[in-house]
Image 1: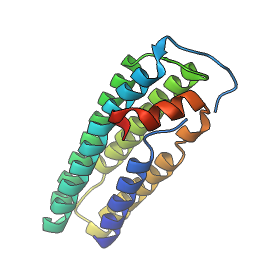
Image 2: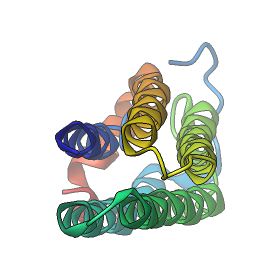
Image 3: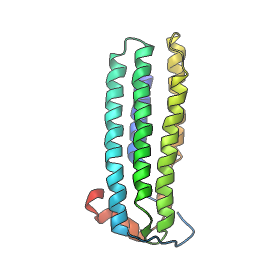
Image 4: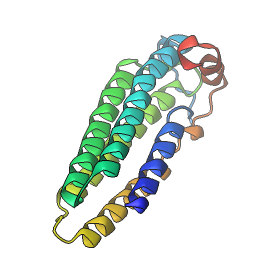
Length: 180
C-alpha cells in the first residue's frame, strides 16, 4: 500500500498546482470586469482545493486503516467520486463567472472551465477504473490502482493554464483578495 500513498500524494500536489494561470491567439474580451472575474474564479477554486485536500486526508486515513483491498477500494472510490463532484462544482462556478473584460479574456474563461472539465473527467475515469477492479487478488488490485492513479496523474499533468497570456488578468489575480 505504500505505492498507493505516494500516488495519492502526487495527485494532491498536482491538484493544488493546477488551479490558476492561462495562451491565446486572439484578443477576445468578455464583459465582466477582470477583478470581478478573477475573484469569482478564485472563490470557486478555493473550496475545490479545500475539498480535494480533505478527500486526500480521509483517503489516506482509510488506506492506513484498511485491513484489506475491499476497504481500501471504498476509500479510494470516496476520494475519486468526491474529487469528480468537487471539480464539477468548481467548473460550474467558473463557467457562471462569465468572460473577463481583459486581453484574451474569452480564451482564459474557456481554458479555466475546460481545465476543470478535464480534471473532472480524469477523476471520473479513474473512479470507473477502480470500480471495476476485483479485490480478491490484492496484489493485482493494487497494481490496478497504481495504473489508475498513474493515468490520473498523466491526465492531470497535461493540464496547462499558463498558456493564456493576459497582463490584465495576471494583475487581477495578484490584487484580488480572494486570490491571495
